Length: 142
Image (cartoon, rainbow, N blue to C red; front, side, top):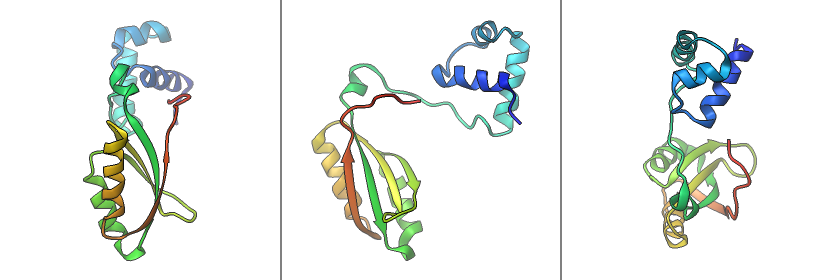
């Protein structure tokens, strides 16, 4: 069970995972040791699995992102998942319900690079067909 204070801590860490324990403690009105213990407990219980990097500035602004729906031959699903995991431009992969089996979030440096990655995905053994939607603008991301 996650307490309201744990939820508040998680929210702060989502905003800035590099925030110091002291700064988090001040914001939450808790002692530094209490916050450190809460973080350790959330990590050991698996609530916090890892910390990650969010790209920013001009680099992020120049990234091209697409959501790629992928229809897979069922007997080759595991092999296709492994192959997709090896493509560095595939940032996230979801198993979904509906006409398509997978949804991949692909990030590339340019439209040309994105096109090459989409070709690579379409040519994977086990991929029956794909449907891509290029992200025009990100309204918000949490």
